[in-house]
Structure formats: structure tokens, C-alpha cells
Length: 131
Image (tube, rainbow, N blue to C red; front, side):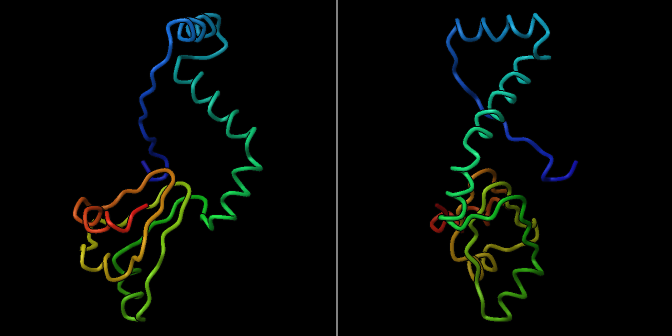
């Protein structure tokens, strides 16, 4: 499965009455299961706020989608004497073969709304730079 296709697990607390209503809609065939209902509700809420999301992404200069940084990408930055500020809405991954020292030398800050996947040592090294 491609990294971008993976989902993140979240946990929510919901009242018994709301849960019962969801179960009723599932039983009546409106949704295949509770997860289908929750995903649909989340998508509809995001769609209803699409303009606000777009405006905020522009204001905060966030990149939408999936970004992957390989060791080679970061080595090129290092060789050029450059660094990056990672600001994303979606998924950001850093390759498993990236050393913490290389990440620190090339990544100035990390702000990810969504999922940030990187080797544990790299995440630990970047923690003070992560919003």
C-alpha cells in the first residue's frame, strides 16, 4: 500500500444517543457501518468549510498533499548550503535512511497538519523545531 493511501486512526467519545442514531442509520442501510458514517460526516464538514481551509492554507503558506524527502533530497540541500521549512497539510514522510544529523542540518522547522512520518531518531532530533 502506498504511504499516501494509509489512514490514521483516531479515537472519539460520543454520547449513547448519538451513537444509537448512527447505529439506526447503519441498520437502515444509509451507511455500511459506523466508520462509513463518520468518514462521510467528516468529509461533508470539511467540504462546507472549503473556502476557509483554502484561505488559511494560503495565509499560512501550507502545501497540500503528500511530500516525501529522501536522503538524496536532503544531501542536495546540504551541498547547496540550503535548508527548508516544512509546512504542509496532508502527509510528510522522511526516508528511513535519513540520519538525524542530516535532518538537523537541512530542516529548519516542521509544521504538519495531518501525518508526519519519519524515523524515530529523526523525529526526536526535530522535536524542538516541530510546531
